[in-house]
Amino acid sequence: MPEPSFLLDGMLGSLARWLRIMGYDSVYMRNEDDLTLLSIRGERYLLTRDRQLAQRAGSHGLFIESDDLDLQLSAVVKRFGLRFDVQRTRCTACNGRLENVAKELIKDRVAAGTYDEIQEFWMCQGCGKVFWHGAHWKSIGHRLDGLS
Image 1 (spheres, rainbow, N blue to C red):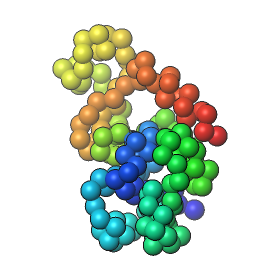
Image 2 (spheres, helix red, strand yellow):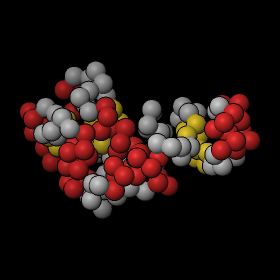
Image 3 (cartoon, rainbow, N blue to C red):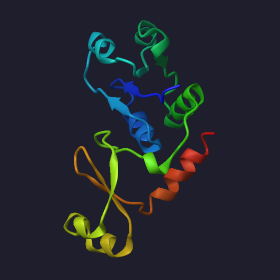
Image 4 (cartoon, rainbow, N blue to C red):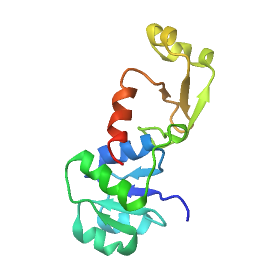
């Protein structure tokens, strides 16, 4: 079975970011109407807080009942059997793939303290944003560990 990918409507921006952190291709469409979402969905699963829109997407639609992020994540993880894989984390901004990058190449793109403290960096192949496992990474892991 191919790995699921997702299209999320304008009410699920935070969920899109967290699915990207988990390593799943997740396109967030902030201001698109229902017909546009349905027409561009393709093989993606449409995640939405709109019950009727989810029904219109048929077997590729999932109505997200809660407005609580942890409950949203839990529902999607359970429905699709998702697993967190740090090696597959995607860009939280644009959904692009991250590639490990030599530290020297990003020296002018991060604060000096970060550069001195952190040994491993990743760059988004889509938008060029630089990522690293900072102090926040532990809390990210705790939230994702609590989903299973």
